[in-house]
Image (cartoon, rainbow, N blue to C red; front, side, top):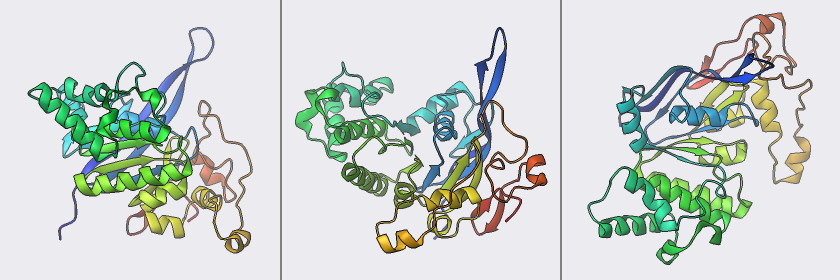
Length: 322
């Protein structure tokens, strides 16, 4: 079997925002700073890190919801830059948002919400065909077609997220950015939605960028995992490899905080607590952004940002002290 090709390639992506700082002055907030990775066709790349590290900004910048400050996004071998390429890309790439309560218009029925992308991209020939497509999409995500005339507020969080997923699937995309799609849901509902994502991937041949801060969720669904810290990608590798053999001290500390259901193992496991404060993204330290909290930091860390180096097949890390 031949190796699947790269569907998405992100090269040296930067996303800086101007933040007001006094009269007529601004500071640069480096939300995403020189991030590069690729996602193969049919795989799921999990993107993790604590709140404010730039995960969501990466997803939104890839989909051109924010215009990149610099860097390139390649999709299916084409550079996404011109207006025409962005329009074509938006038919093949969609987003499922974090909050199913605020991402759906309360004045629209379920049928209108799911049908909106079909209207925008003119993907039907008659009203009958439109209705059939909406019914099919509702069936795909486990919603009853009787609910088509109801409004979003009449549904639970899990059902609303299903509506959001059906809306994303309407244009028959190849690639979906899932921005913390289960973090606002109960744990029992989370499992149902995650299993549905996996089933849809198998049925429709989808490729995911799955953004989350819960490492257990990411391990369950991802083929590979990438770890971000303050706008930088610091480790990336196959899911099991990264989970069982983390290299970067930040990844190790994140994994030590994951709850373990077995009390004996949990007691034996030592929690790695990081000292020091998270630097302000407006006043970033020089060199490695993690050095202010790293137990192994040296002068070199303050001077030079480490590059991502491959330590084992597919497992890369940005650290001077590996």
